[in-house]
Structure formats: C-alpha cells, structure tokens
Length: 60
Image (tube, rainbow, N blue to C red):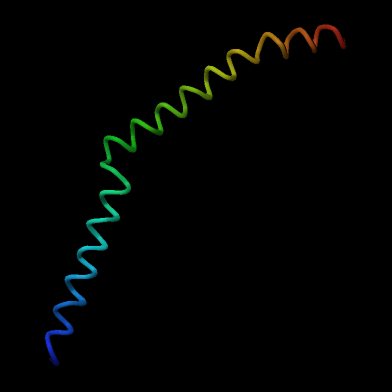
C-alpha cells in the first residue's frame, strides 16, 4: 500500500454510502412518503368519480 491509498478508498466509499443513506432517508420516512402519495391518489380518484359518472350518464 503506497501512501495508504487503499485506506483512503475505503474511507471514500464509506463516506459515499453514508451520504446516500442520509439522502434517501430512513425506512419510516420513505414509507410515510409512499403512503402519502397513495393517499393523494385515492383522493384524486374519489374526486374524479362524480365527474366520470356524470359524463357517462350524459353520453348514455
């Protein structure tokens, strides 16, 4: 090992891994975001249903 190059590579990859984990957030935060996204989709579908029913009734 010349000048501890291998040690620096390990340190660098460990630092990148920590940064990636910090950026992605915890499992609880990701789960909350997915749940919120699904809830927004459900509200959108619920809001669109009467419009779709009215359009179908006018056509039929």
